[in-house]
Length: 436
Image (cartoon, rainbow, N blue to C red; front, side, top):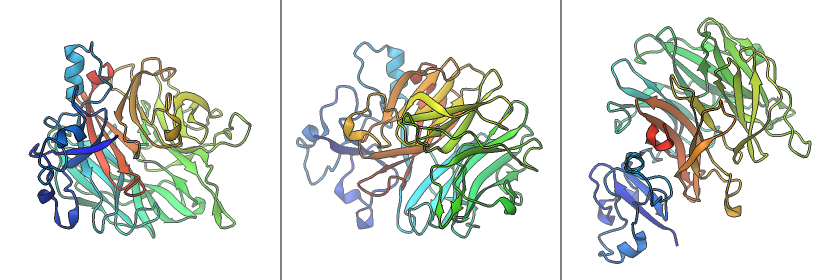
């Protein structure tokens, strides 16, 4: 039997009924997990068993020890270093949904010159679907992602007929900060936009349309997707869902836009060849990302309906792509995130690992997993789960390397309470935990 339990991130006190907010809502600093769970302390008794030893009217759920959350199956022979790394993982339920704010999702991080980390995300106001109204809001951390400000800062009002959403942040090679997002006007006009800041994200330039009006269509640029290559070229990987005859092609066509002048002007690359399933049918290819390999090639990865991420390669800086083919990254139709640990030969992958998934969880965006590759994404090692609620919906991960830790933001809603995209968590993981 799975039993929910939680703790108060600020006071570490047990959560009781009389500490709930008006209306029965839980404050944002409460985090709830399920027992058994990879976050349960090693050797802990089931939460249900312990709860029975405490007054039912006072204790709703049990606290974990401190803000320390362990993540991997118990390993009796774990070294002291492995245990320390596991105990250093911290999860913050940063952005739960609330009245007038039914969804918080698809954000990204950037490190500011004063040492703070800024997180900008998609703040929805009148619905939780992708077409509901949303603006861009921000939170700050002054301690490397351990804690965050409690109140939103408005970054960009809604300038689309539907919304603005899906943030990528990038420290450009010239020192400026670039903000990318989707401006969604309708099912025939959803395009990426770029703004830049010369004052550390206090103000932003006028918008730069990456795609001209004459090429308007429904393009998807996921959060934390735009990259700047060693050459200085900016690459925005896109899925095009052309609208014809009152319907969109949701299977998607993959392509990139790229800029060689720091985003002043953009050019359209050629579309990738159509990907196919094992049975020869056209595969779904949606929400692509790219990572630069050591040999100068780009690897594109994309979610599909074929049980794994597909990958394609470019040897000309995203102007053309090989045919997307199946990879060893087994997953549902859910986006992955891959980035390089700076100044290393190690790639870091976060995705829904379905290598040994049970039949009842096939197709679901759980668990949330992390792994590394030291051979340029040919193989992946040290795969571990960070979250495993069977009702969890873990997706749209942003990744930020912060010293000897990595910050991960991701949707982490419970599907029994909404569409799974309604709340965002931030997890701080020591690189030592994954073998780095």
